[in-house]
Length: 71
Image 1 (tube, rainbow, N blue to C red):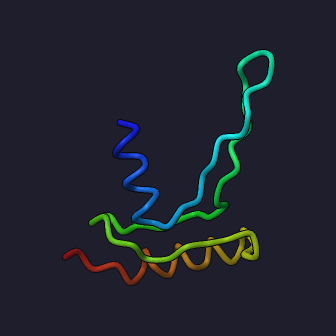
Image 2: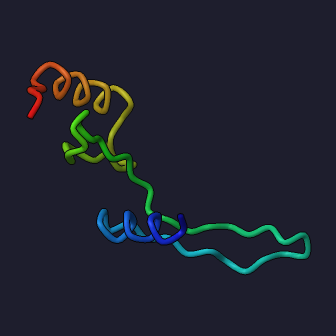
């Protein structure tokens, strides 16, 4: 639901704002640009911004996968 999406955004401190609609009703959304890594248990593990290369992200994800222990 829209309410659940807003609640998740608040929980992860995500910024999102819809811009004005154009003549066709389309609009641009300004938003936080991050990737969040969650465990299979739904716990926050890490986040990756624009400063991380694909290789750095892959290494981090592999490290988290290798060290994962279920709750």
